[in-house]
Image (cartoon, rainbow, N blue to C red; front, top):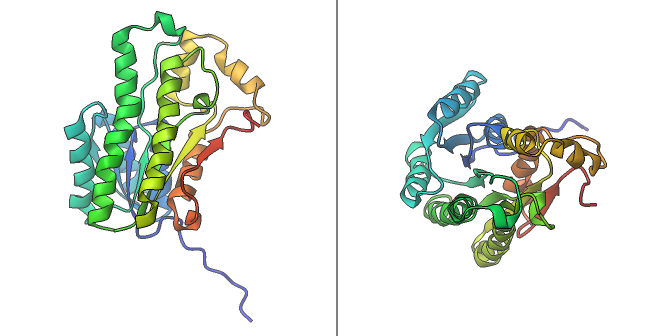
Length: 259
């Protein structure tokens, strides 16, 4: 009896769309999804970062391209999703990762303009992206999966980042509603909720609130921050057929900080 087993790549033969793919969790996800067999379209606002990650993926033997996308601009989001279909003929999975952080501080010290910007990018952006992605999946692959990037800060009081936390909590609600709405047609929708992850966003938070990373790590049983690829691994599994009976969940990837 032959006991050898062949492991199929997690996202073999899938077309994946990733927002915020120029750096951090999005870049890690784009690299991983390509290694796991997907053809990937990277979307973000910064052309130089997108180009660098795309070239890195191609040099490693993966299939990738990139497109400019502003999550505050509905036409830009639709065009980016349409580009995936134009390039690869279909859309199977999407990771709505792109986000912006607010200036840390109490909610009464946040300007209305900054509040509106955080909500526009972090809540309206994923809503617009899901609308475009669901239309593209329906029209091409027929079934598929979407993962939204939330935050562990959406699951509790978030006095340092109140608008950011509120937007991410609303994303959890949108995720659950979409899962209930589109599950009957075979489109799964989940979210990941990262804990403190070593990205430029948390570097900016540390610069504005010195000591915050140390405080977050002190509350984490695993005793460290996450590497972006660890969040990407959770998203990849949720997008894969190996998570075929999982929908409507907010998966905590937080080193145990909310245990």
